[in-house]
Structure formats: structure tokens, C-alpha cells
Length: 118
Length: 114
Image (cartoon, rainbow over all chains, first blue to last red):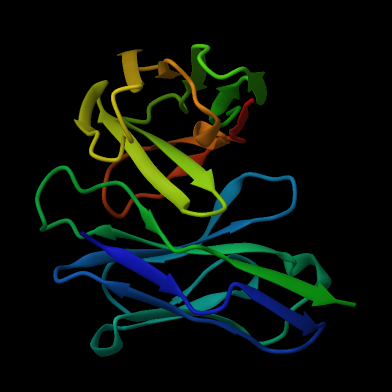
């Protein structure tokens, strides 16, 4: 079974600061990796995902993440955060397409609550 | 598209009562997922369906929980009898496919069991 670890539960930054949120997963096979975001009062929505190809993926709102297979990591980055980035961020993993059936659900990390101070 | 629709948005009930949560997935999506979010355990997968068939229910906590998908546009999650430890936010999500496809989440149902 997969597991996901997010290193920071709460992060407070000032506007224009750079952001990196850590995510590590444990799973022996091929994985699909996701970052979801939940803005205050809104639904969970996808920021970006990786399943194959270029390990550096770009998502919405200037976010990017890098898959480092040797480190089992998928850290989220943004060079300059804005007040509107205040939200809860979730890293998630599902088993890859070659792992067989019955493995399509997401395993989530506990989330990181990000607060951006103006 | 209206997105994934869940009802009710809030439910307060007393211990021992039956609770039914409802979900309407996005039209054309073949997969439907139920998740539960609590402070202690975070977001957990309870069960998911593919083409209305339950594929993996290993996350359902116990026999008090059951889920059905009678057709492609409707699913229910039932708790009978409910207990205070069932208090959580329950999310429904749907996707076009499994694995690497994006899951679209509903707004959630906040359940409080007194």
C-alpha cells in the first residue's frame, strides 16, 4: 500500500517569498503523483500531476513540481507567492497504470496549511 | 457543467440514527470515489466505483458503512447506525478514468454526530 508524507503541517510566508512544500511517498511500483489545493471555502482542485515523461511538471497559477524517483519525492514549488495562495495543499499518489486493477484511488498526505502574509 | 454535486452540505444527527449522503458525479465520468476527511487521519479513500461497480471498498471502516451506485448519475453513502466518531467531512469525486486521470471533487458533506 502507498503512503504519503508531507513535511510541514503549517507554513507562514510573506508575499513574494519563494515556496517549497515537501512530499515523499512510499510505494514500490510505478506511481502517479498529484498536488491538490483547497482554497478557503472552495472545493479541492488539481494544481498539477505527473505520471510519465518530463519529471518537472508545471501547473496552474505558476506552481511547478519535480519528481525525483531516487528520492521518492514530489516537491511543490513557486518562485514568488501571493496572498491569494493562502490555502491547504495536499500531495497525493495513485498506483501507476501497470500495477493492475483496483488501485485507482488516491492516497493523500495530511496536508500543509499555507498562510501568506501581505 | 455543474461539477460534482453532493447533498446535504451539512448534516447534524444523533448517535444511532441512519445517515445517507448523496453524490451526483460529472456526466460521462466512469469513476466515482468516496473520501472522508478528519483532523486525525486526513483524507482517506473509503470506496470507489467503475461503471457503477464497486472496485475497492477496503477503506470502508466497518459494516456500519455501505455505498451504492444504482446508476451512472447517482451514488449514496450510508451509515447505520451512526456514531460520534463518524463526524467528518465526506467528499465525493469523479473522473473520466482511473490512475492518472484528474479527480474532480464535490464540496463535501460536513457530518456531525452528537
